[in-house]
Length: 450
Image (cartoon, rainbow, N blue to C red; front, side, top):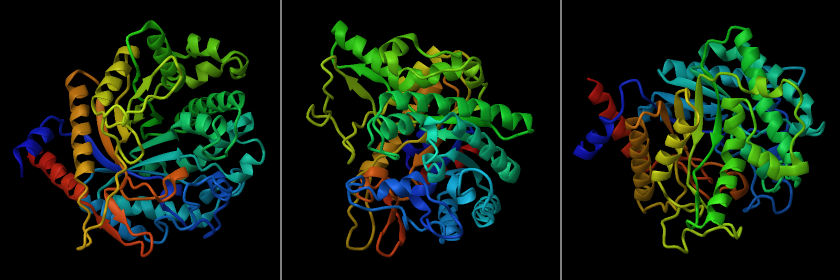
């Protein structure tokens, strides 16, 4: 075991949680098996040109049929926890009304299998795969979906709550709202800023109402939400660039964190939205601002903002990037976490619920994948979390994105984030070098506790 590995492991407390993460639509497949209903992503994948490689999630990684194998794979890594999402259309095909016994049974097997292996279960209720039946009735643009979501959460809590170590309402509401309803590049593929902002409000409102409902029914597992947030830095020190970066931070981060932690939307963003600002009913903001047991943060890169409005290309500036074209910038994670601590006194425990990089991952002649770039990415970002911990941020856990290569949304299967390689022809799983590094690192963490 290297001294550097030991030194990094020793920077974390013994109760720090290490894990890996996935989501239902990206890995489960079996979209027309066991009574599952259609989701908005099933529909979106059929739109010509929506997915870069013309693919879909019908098979994905076939996790639905390979559950035990995949649970053994997770256990082999030595992680303490596993973050996954529940497919709403699998357990409640229409998003309301009758529950699907076969879908519920799948998650029973998943949770029981994790328990047998001593792995804590962290579930997400909404990782973007809204039932298509609800979309047909207005989707997240309709306030009725807010209440259907609360009812769905109640049903999940009643069935699975006693086996969960953590439960989050939504994964990355900014993505659902902005990419799905303003830019139209993600499901459901709509293009209206006014609708997108109403969707963002409904997502936040459903989060707050769900926390109230679950606690009223005696939920004991920690409850929270997962946000994709990043530092927004000005391209130069010019006042106009600094102002543009501040507003960009408002749209992407403070629009979500301010109502969650302070009970109000940021005034600068509200003014910038003008007639596109959402309709907010009396009491909504108080409902949103429920105390959270933890906050999930998904971090991949920083954003550099120019008043000219043109995106700054990190690769053209000579900075390292992933296969997604995202700058590799570990310091941004520390900066972001420190900003959260400064902005919101009483910040709850923070879990990094996603962090990882897509890289080309060529398979060697002997079948191995030597992804040193991903290993370096993880090592440097874990060190960035340690830096934040050293400076007083209440860090509680870190989860690698992702356990395995999978359906990467609009990129299809062309981008690989996994620490486990998936051959999409045979569906064989092969741990990459980064998985072996993670095993060694977690072994060092365990040894330090001894």
